Amino acid sequence: MTQLRILFLGTSGSWPTIQRNVSSTAIHRGSEVLLFDCGEGTQRQFQRTSLSFMQITNIFISHFHGDHFLGLPGLIQTMQLNDRSQPLHLYGPPGMNKLTAQLLTLGYFRPAYEIISHEIEDGETVQFDGYDIKTLATKHNVPSLAYCLEEHQRPGKFNKPKALALGIPEGPLFSKLQHGQTVTLKNGKKITPDMVLGTARRGRKVVISGDTTYDEELISFAKHADVLIHEATFDSSFTESAEYGHSTAAQAAMIAKQADVEALFLMHISPRYLDPKILEEEARTVFPHSYVAKDFQEVEVRLKP
Image (cartoon, rainbow, N blue to C red; front, top):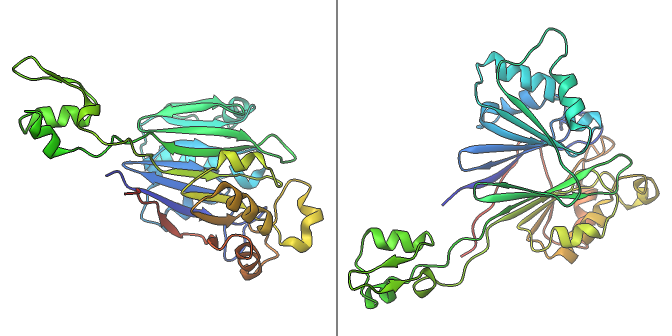
């Protein structure tokens, strides 16, 4: 079973506070680490966790406000100082290529490993081994993307008694059928995977909103997600301010409730909230499974039976 866990590296909005660094979320899946946003200081946040920034394979930037990307120069250069040789892929909205070129020519730095930039648009899907990353343009005051990590479907449960009854001997043929391959028995009979496998099971789904005001398109984008990570810059007393590109905790909870997600984690918390309890309580009046994320908090996303 491939482990999937979320590590919150920075949960503050706009600038760092004593309790919180700015936006950055890592998803550790199997042997790779995916990074979503990279606010200043992200490389140091990694050093206080069990993960290594050298494990990062892909970085996804939601938009080009400093609290979401200014950690890239230091992270990229530190990777080189630690003898990175593996290619690094950077993804973001249009403008990512220009930004990457600027990052790679700051000062006297020139990369010794391959750094590949990708510009992605609203509605695109980037395919990886075992999962896809999907995008949705959100309602912010600059072009911004929400991201969805959705695992591919898993094969249905293998029915061993049925396989034996069909005359399939234990061994390599079992494995081939479990991996979706048709096999031929010695008597010439063909056995297809659907003859011995149950209904396909869905993989896990994690959605990260990035910065956005209340956006009903996120409801279908996050539908049935295991985890929705949604910005909640304000409480409802600042609803008017939120209309300029951010959300309240109650609005994030409304998205979570209508999307029928399993859990909501609130981040991009305004520095005005030294105690974010008001945000968590407000969200829970709408959607009980709401939590204010904390820096260095880890959340394991388990496979469903």
